[in-house]
Amino acid sequence: MKDEAEGIAPLIIAAVVVVIVVVVGVGVYVMVSRGGGGGVLGTLPVYPGAQETNDTTAQQMITSFTTGMGLPSGWSFKAYTTQENLETVIGWYRT
Image (cartoon, rainbow, N blue to C red):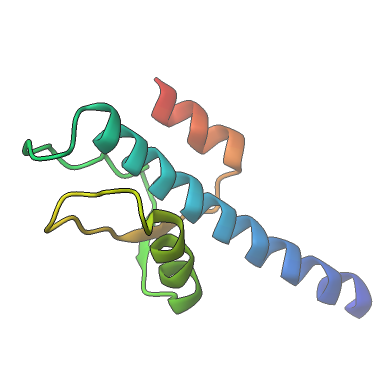
């Protein structure tokens, strides 16, 4: 049983990081697709029940992901986590 728990923990961590990257990716897409080169945009809605995180690995991944995208000055981001699966979060943002 202990071996199973040790094998599941890295999968859960990876899933949380993927959800964070997807949420940020959606935010960047929305900003860029709306002509974020200078206009003022509203904030991207946060998935219900998501919790803000200060995970440095997530912050580094987001920074790496957005580097060189030509984002407007003053652009900022926050990372959130949720227990929901990736398909549910993506579906919520699509609707």
